[in-house]
Structure formats: structure tokens, C-alpha cells
Length: 259
Image (cartoon, rainbow, N blue to C red; front, side, top):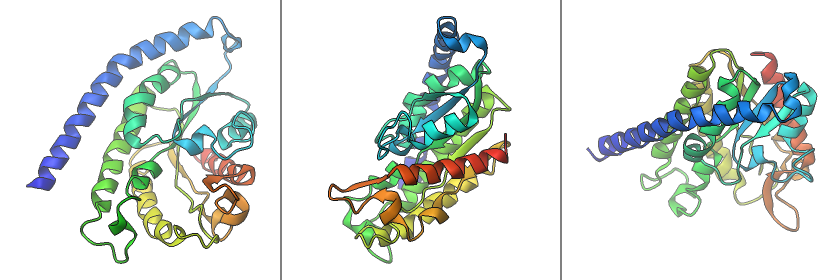
């Protein structure tokens, strides 16, 4: 009964969030279209819409404006970057805060493609729970409930994007293990739970046309010391410039399958 109550409550929260998105999307579209009249975008140049977490925001890159994966991908595709991603954002944050703004260019038909990097921080919230690093995982670790929430919210995000624009290509990130090959204490736990998260991401993406999954995982396998700041003197669990290039490569490859 408790599980059913939690699912019902989650569904109600998502319904309210989507209702807010409906209202804000019209405002977002109007503001975006209005901005075109006072910028070089008036020439008809496409934009790339990026939503998500710190990876998409460019954390770890030496210059988020030029060496982050989103900036690199925008340069390769010769489009302007409209990056709404924020460090620490969860799937709930994307759904309730970023999506309405993203729908402006999407509804206006100005988005050439959209990328999503979300779900990692939903799992990161479990880190303080010591039960979630045990193997096998005890019932006291709410991993299953967290993954179910990611599935529900990511599905809502993709559904809303697809309702706003049936053709715009969307690519979702499958998270690499940034700790792989570093020997860090989080390497093994991340190696256990990230495949579960990525399976959820792939499953949700498969339910929509023109939605692909970027798979940078193989590039990071055993290479966390070279592609991240995990072993830097100042610990930072984000990709460095080389890591961002690897992620950009994965997005570009996935984009080819839906563009």
C-alpha cells in the first residue's frame, strides 16, 4: 500500500509540474521568438537546446563556453547553443524548471536538436545512505524507487518534447563511469548502479521516435584517470576537456542515427 501511495503521489506531482510547463511553455515560446528579432538568430540560424545537469552545464571543462561537450557539439554542428543545464539538476529539476524554457525554441521550430543529461544526480542523492554502497544492496537502500522515479520523469520530459515537436531529434546521455580505472572508493558502487540507470534511460528512449542514446561509456572504461578530474589534487568527479570531447563524440555519433 505504501508503494502504491508513493507512486500516486509521484504521479500527482508530475501532473502538477506538467500543468505548470503548459503555462510557461507559451511564455517561453513567445520570449524566444521575440528575442530572435533583436539578435543574429533573425537570419534563421538553428539552435541546439541542451538541458540537464552539471555535465551538460560544462563542469570540469577548462572553459564551459568552448570546451564543454555541449559547446563542442554546437561548434561541430554549426548551430548556436541554448544551454539551460544547471549543476546539481535532477530529473525533477529538468521537468519543473528547465523544460518550459526549452520548449520555446522547440515549439517555434528553431531547435535543430536537443540533448538531455539527467538522472545522475537522482542517484547521487543516495550517496549519504550507507546501505546503498553495500553489496548486495539491502532493502533499506531505495535504489529501485529512485530508478522508478527517473523512469517516470524522463518519460514525461520526452513526451512533452515530442508533443511540442514531433520531428526534432533528441539524444539522451547514458552515463559513463567517471571513476573507472581510478581505484577510487566510488568506482565499484558506480559500476554497479550506473548500468541500472542507463538501462532505464535506454528503455525510456526506445519508446519514442527520433530519440537516441549517447554511449560514451566505452571511452571511459578504465580511463577515468585520463578523462576526468577524479584523481586530481582537488577532487572533482567530472570530465576534463578530453572527457568532454569523448562525450561530444558519443553525442555526435548518436545524433547521426536520428538527424
